[in-house]
Length: 325
Image 1 (tube, one colour):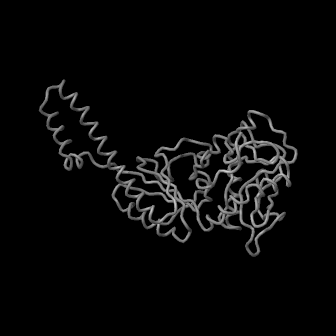
Image 2: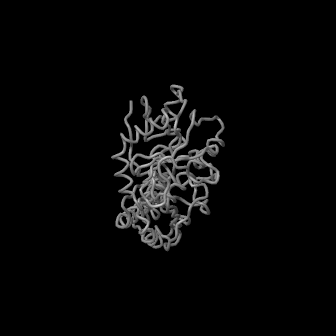
Image 3: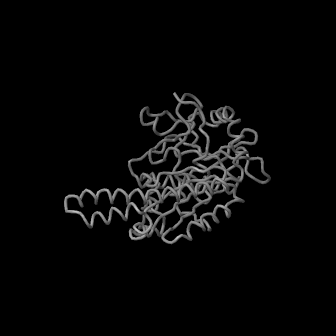
């Protein structure tokens, strides 16, 4: 199965803390050169005179890639068209732009535009440098280049190790939807207990039949839940063999700002049907086709539809950095 990239570059992702919640985790606000997030900023208005807005961390040791102080070539710049540069300590760089305030607005459409532009810059960095360590929206260092360098020196070991370990690995999103639920008649033919309840209902008085109907519906629900769990467990086992990490996601994701880019939380083209399972996986780019072949097998089942999106920067698998108050 070939994978798709959503045009927005945001809908398929659910970071550890969503941008829709305005949490710039993995960083929390401390003093001096520690990155701050928008959630902290709402509690205590920040004093940002010479801030640096962070997009992602990258390796800058490749031939021909931009280095310390170099400007990235982006058609429309960063958020609000700001020029985007790289600041580096040794072979680890941070893609950033200068700012003097947090990005906060009561206009949801404006926030969505910022989110999309943030993701565009991270995607571009991935194309230029290889797999990045992405930062959440509105992650800011308050003390200019020197403050950012100091923070980068503090987090250097973690970032260098993570970039090395994630090299060539990307995040992929998977959703299995049952577009044609299993027929009740089929369940009656294959489950003796359900069939027995049906016969007893037909032979009972109205009062008894009402109680048996409740048991019948409960049994139907159990059978369908077991089928869903079986599909999920089998797919999880097969993905584990081909991906470095596999995380199960909620079947019905909460609506966030990111969902507004397409106006729907359902995969494109699958508006009807029940989601059986959702996964995010970290896999090497060379194993993308192997993961896709597993999904092909699932999609061959009648009444199933599968979406496979990516590659995305590994938001779900990025480490937590910095301390918290």
